[in-house]
Image (cartoon, rainbow, N blue to C red):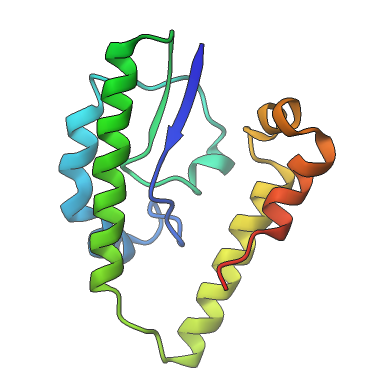
Length: 142
């Protein structure tokens, strides 16, 4: 069984920040619609966890097959190209208040990853508990 989460994680909760959602995800929604039937929703996710996923998240489970792996690779490629496009369009933030707000949002995400990420058990089985705990804590964007 393959368990997949593929996303362009939002910095802010897109349910409560419509402007942020429109800015970053309005033109990406066709990407989600392209794969929703090919890679159907995997299972329940807690409401606390959902705020750390975007409206274009792919969260799916499937038995291994070349067909599904090819679809997943195509989705990964499309998401990666979308991310590169977002990076090309990015503008350096210079407003000190916005920078602090962005840092706090990133901190909240990393705190959630370190303490409540549903994928932690899988990482612990693959890497061991020590490395599974260290991954999100030691992650840095610098």
